[in-house]
Image 1: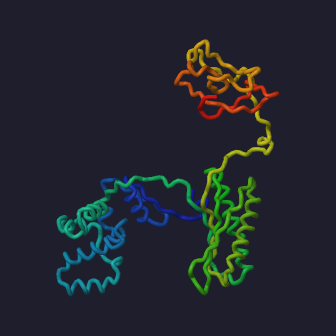
Image 2: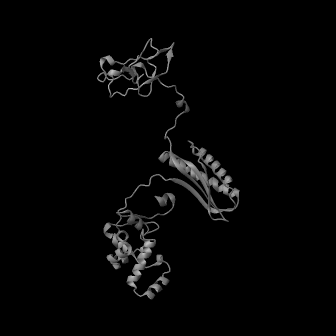
Length: 342
């Protein structure tokens, strides 16, 4: 499918652990898959150079090559001659099979320590207990062009192409992950100074049409290019979107935010359970003729009960008045506040 639809080749590896699968993917490039059964893992690794084994390409690989030279070529002069013949450890002939078959386990333990020795033997025999972890959505999207741009007009032309491509990727990302970037970063290298320079700004707000987003990203990109005061010619130009935040997957008309608040009818007001409060503590909603509720009462969510009869488990709170008529409290217009006597 990749070759048919995208016109490029790919290779892959299939194995019982991540390290072997990645190792196998490099064996039959550019357009084949390699399957490694567990029984063939050691045989496959036996022919792979030490420095090409995943995890053994740095100082640990150098130490193994040096140790093999000391074991197989005891004479110091011959060792030096071998190093001159293979000027880089990466060109060394030693393989993972040589590590397993030629280096005694006790010598490996003495030279490297227990942890490193176990790591080397596991890598050279195809043992890898590292779990495969899903990486999740990408943290950023970047479009880049490495080409000589001799003046600002040329840079603006390439910036337009980068903005269009980046906008398409952001639109696809939003469809898949329901998010939008906050930061837009323009980076470039100049011919006189190959160091990377960058300028960041706010990514344009999301648009429900791809074309609208393209124009906004292009405008923001050109603003960053002008503000960067780049000296031409440029040798590289890149545009990156990062710092993603989640957004609502649906849209709302502005009129949905202008609807009046709804008031619950009297029949829907909360009423305490008859098993919780005694008969004498039925909900009290009106206090006619009183400038304030009768003393000794605690107000709950729309009802009042005598303090002496209020159950401990009931979350009763005091209230604050919201409406009066001629100095008389309206009993059904009390607002829940913090707990306390009123």
